[in-house]
Structure formats: structure tokens, C-alpha cells
Image (cartoon, rainbow, N blue to C red; front, side, top):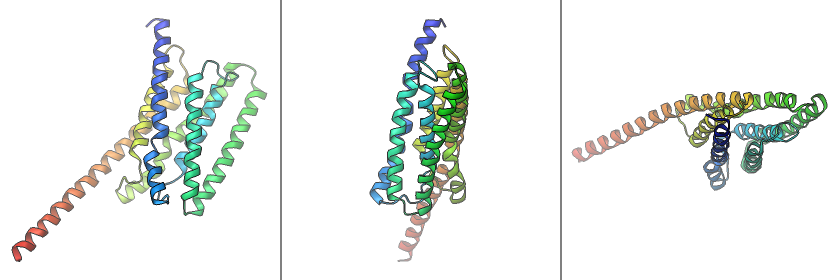
Length: 243
């Protein structure tokens, strides 16, 4: 592929990546619709939204012209994501009945803001070229990107214990998988971006693991429901014959 062709492909994949990333950011909407209707967060956890918020913060920093020029697509989608995650956390805080969750959200947001300020300060103070700044912030982004993609894994223990996928949001897992694969492809076009490639490559893998777990336990739930219906129908037939 020619240089111009790679540049065009990168732009197109970047736009597709933005669309899929937006889908990832709005994928919790059914969960929060349920929270608003029931006025409780039930057994849902805030970790995923805190991780996603921090990830967006650092990618916005990474995309700034003083760190990594020509990264408009990175800034725009992560700015939107940051706004949406703030809304999700506000709703979660308002409707959770657990003081522990409220404490986790407040502490988490404060720690994230302090961490962002510290990284931004160190970036400007200690590094004087775009390459060095991109490397430093990029490494931080990789770490928190992996945390974001892996955050639904915190629910897997509960899924395996209860053998239910009720609290493992399918759309978040699917959007995370597609998002990781798309941005991994984007990172390999025109100019190879190591940091986008590593974080999203691992993210795609983690998303695949979550989908496999979801499919496995979802099938078990369906098989159980089918067996339950069959047992109920059999009992009805027995009762009718007796009568």
C-alpha cells in the first residue's frame, strides 16, 4: 500500500474507531436505564466506569498538540467518553444504597484527578520533545487502557459463582472487543503507534475472553431455563392425568 493509501486507510479506520468507541461509551445505557427505573444500583459495580474515565483522561492528554500532534480523532472521542463516564458515575453515586460504593467513587475520582495533574506536570517539566512526551504519556495510557478493558473481569468471579451473566453487560464486552481490534488496526497504519497498538491489542484479547465467558454461562442459563420449562410442563401433564 502506498503512503497516501495508508494515510487514507488510517483516517477511515480512525473514524470507524471513533464510531465504535462511541458505541463502547454508550453501551452502559441499558444498565443505567435499569438503575433509573429501579432507583437502585443493585449488585452493579462502579469500577468499570472509574477505569474508563481515567483512561479517557489520559488519552485526551496524549492527544494534545504539546504531547502528540495530529491526534484530533483521539482527543474528540475520548473527550466525549470522559463526559459520558462523568454522567454515569453521577447517576451511580445518586442511586447506590451502599456507602462503600459512594466512598469508592469519591476516592477514585479524586485519585484520578491528582494522578492526571501529576502526569501532566511531569510531562511538561521533564520532557522537552514530542517523542519523549508521547513515550511517557503513552506508557501511562497503555497501563490504564488495559485496566479499562479488564475492568469487567472484576465481575467474572460473581458470574462463575452464581453461574449467571445478569451483571456482566454483554454490550460493554462486545463494544470493548470491537474497539480494541479497530484501534489496534489503526495503530498499524501509516506511522506505527506502539502505545495505541499495545493497549488496544491487549484490550481486544480481554474483550474476547469476556465474550467467551458470557457465551458459556449464557448457554448454561438457557439450558437451565429450557429444562425448567420442560419440568413444569411434565408436572402439569402429571397433574392433569391424575385429575
